[in-house]
Amino acid sequence: MRSMGTDAPAIAGNSKLRALIVDDEDSILQLVAMALRYDGWEVETAATAAAGLEKLHDFTPDVMVLDIMLPDFDGMQLLSRIRAEGSLVPVLFLTALDSVDDRINGLTAGGDDYMVKPFSLEELIARLRALVRRSQLLRDQHPDPLLRLGDLVLNEDSYEVERGGKPIELTTTEFELLRYLLRNPRRVLSKAQILDRVWSYDFTGKPSVVELYISYLRKKIDDGRPPMIHTVRGAGYMIKAAEKR
Image (cartoon, rainbow, N blue to C red; front, side):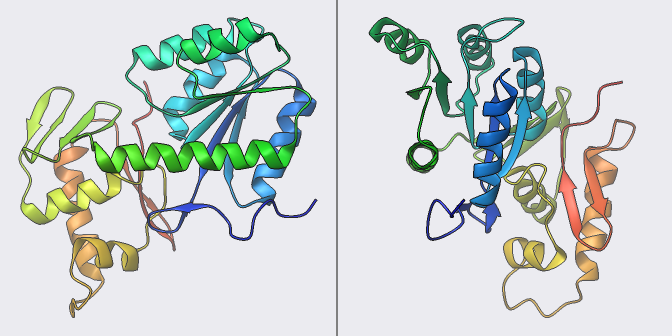
């Protein structure tokens, strides 16, 4: 299979784009996942609506491919739950339902695009790229000041942070560090990347300052709570929603 484009897709920070595929037909699931991974995407899959909803929370994809006919509850119901939670992740329906009414229902339910099986892999990937570009453009034009991950909320306008509804006081540097982590959930960020984004490019101090401020942040964000900030040995740091107990 040849690459679907000239460049691997990426978002700010040179991170891979993320796609979540929800389909109970294993051959379709594996085919689409393989094509996207070959094209440079990071991919997660689910075979049921319930598993898809859980993966959506944990994986925070940039776009979602969703079948309508699923074994537990259908894709329309899943999308309704996703939108009810406030998620604006772009969703492309990929389904065997090909009537005009089906297409209208899918788009009316909050879907962003609709493709019918059988389908072209190249067209699918092109449409997914277009959805991500459109979504990023809308976010840039109408940015949401709230960055949310699990029970942690950061307000970029008011510079307020809370976890589990309780306010957390941060210094300016701690706030910028947390903001950078939250803008890249479940992505490993190296010390060099963090220095470039949180401190100035001409910063002449030691990279150990990152370790120091990560420790400060952990004491305020994670102290007495399930941890969200994680060290990936030899690679950097990552923030993700705390595991449920």
